[in-house]
Amino acid sequence: MLSSVRPVLERIAFKAGSPVSSRGLKSLKIGLIPGDGIGKEVIPAGRQVLEALPVEDGLKFQFVDLIAGFECFKATGVALPEETVKVLQEECDGALFGAVSSPTTKVAGYSSPIVALRKKLGLYANVRPVKSVGDDRPVDMVIVRENTEDLYVKEEKIWTLEDGSKVAEAIKRITEKASYNIGKVAFELAVQRGASRAASAIPTLHPNGPIVTITHKSNVLSTTDGLFRETVRKVYENNKDKYEGVQVQEQIVDSMVYRLFREPEIFDVVVAPNLYGDILSDGAAALVGSLGVIPSANVGDSFVIGEPCHGSAPDIEGKNIANPIATIRSTALMLEFMGYAKPAARIHAAVDAHMVEKKLRTPDLGGSATTTQVTEDIIKRL
Image (cartoon, rainbow, N blue to C red; front, side, top):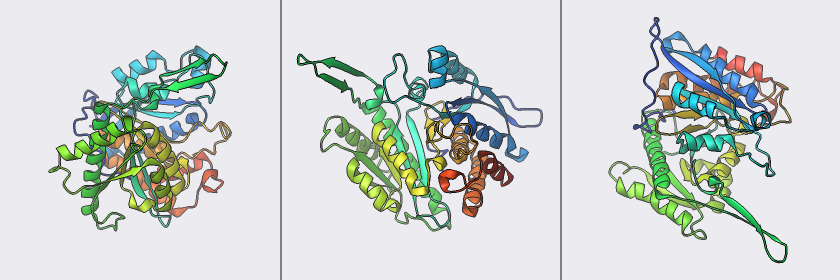
């Protein structure tokens, strides 16, 4: 799906200490964090796909099961145990995260573990590719979401006025450093996607070169979103020679939503602050059928976590009908950002072949197939 993603963050220096086995296979330790709900059903699918990769790809895997989530919080009083973070930092080469059941009302002491994990591990970029397959509506974009700040800093307060009414307030924090980092990821991605398309004979939706669309609301939030807009543009201005072939466009976020659904084929790389990126990427899933097929990677300078974009779906938990494709694609993205393009491409090709056939579909795509059946079919195609 993103055959050119891996070189994007050339400064990434993932752990190089994993041993090589006697068979000449590189051993990678992957942390598995199912979380809540259907996370416990789809994360095993990612593991099974990794275990099924052929020997010729040169990899073998060890897995460590870790806990986090709302169920973990209810059982232990902690949503993200320090031991989970420590094992990821000290022992793992990468990780997969399933889903989390964050309550919609305030629960004392609880905070989203995936948001905390992104901050603790410095995973400042959330990369979400949205691409149609076969004869579906043409879509081929990547939404690059800043992952560590904006309203997600979770600095909120509430107080009562003299008349007894309440006022709630939240901090929206945008920094030049984080905005520059995410802007660089977006432009590097655009260059790599452009190069990949130029080297391919396959027709493209973007024949005139790569495009970066900066999404913001600086017409109203002129200070915060204004800083984001200016800083991302500065990435381009400071590196014009490197990004010479990239077109730079802008969209006010409400206009972006409108055009995303009216003419999704015009977008290539979309970069946005945390909140807008979260909303846009979930909404974009409707363009290709379901959140169940949309992957993501949380990426930093030294670690990556693959994470399906869907939630914990408690209504279908335990029924073996959750779509595992988002997790399987996220597994491939994790490998890409770790530097293993060949096995990642193999997984993407197997998923695409499965989807083009349209024979086995889980209920979210209008079918009756099970999680197990879809996973097994994809594995057979490896």
